[in-house]
Image (cartoon, rainbow, N blue to C red; front, side, top):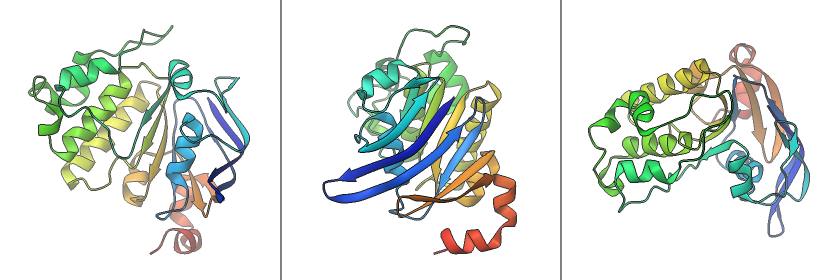
Length: 233
C-alpha cells in the first residue's frame, strides 16, 4: 500500500529525517513510535508532501508520490489528519465535513456525513455547531471525519490521542479498529504505547530521524530493552 524508502528531509540546514524506511500493508495499522522531536510528525508531512523530501522514495499504490503537491497526493487516496487538527472554527460540523468531500473510489463504500456520525455518534447531535465551540476530543473526531470524507485508501493519523481524556482515547481506539475492519490502512504516529498496542499490527521506532527498530507490535511488547532504550522518558 505504502512504501517509504530512504527518506530524508530538512528544515533549513537542520537534517530532520535521515533515511527513514517503512511499509504499510493493505488493511493494517502501522504505528510510528518515538519520543518528542524524534521525527514522527516530519515523516508524516514528508509523505504527504507538506515537507519536501530532500532524498528518498515514497510509493503509494504503486505510484511514486515524493515531490508531488499535497493536493495531488490527497486526490490519489492518501488522507492526512494533522496533530493540530486545523478545523474551520466558524463553520459548522457539517460544513467542516463537506469541505473534505471527494468523489467515491472504485470498490470502496463512500463516506458521507451520516457515515461519519455513525463512526462518531457524538458528532450527530452537533451537526449545526460551529467547530470553534467543540471540545478538543470532539474536534479530533471532526478532523478524522473530514479526512474520511475524502474517501482515502490509507490515512495518516498524527498523535490522535494526545491531550485527550481517557474515555475519548477509548473512542479513538474503537474508531481506528472499525476503520481497520473495513479494510482501511492506517499509518499512526503515537507516544501512548498502550494506545498503540491496542490498535496496531506493526511498529517502527524512530529516534533522531532514524528508524531504530521495526517489527510486530507483539514483539515490541516483549522487547523491554528496545522500549527502555527508545521510548522511556
